[in-house]
Length: 68
Image (cartoon, rainbow, N blue to C red; front, side):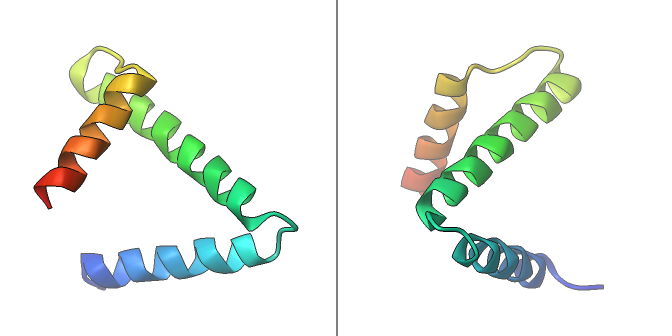
């Protein structure tokens, strides 16, 4: 079984390669971010019983980024 960094590297590879197939790669990458946020929102609600707003999700990301 692969370790998490290897899995994440592979995910990033396929996302970037897929973006290169688009006329506007940045637009595609923004679409992927939106999908990931919505997926996280649903998973968080399932786990915790309530839904975070998109602003709360963005704030969680910013806080995590500052801490690392």
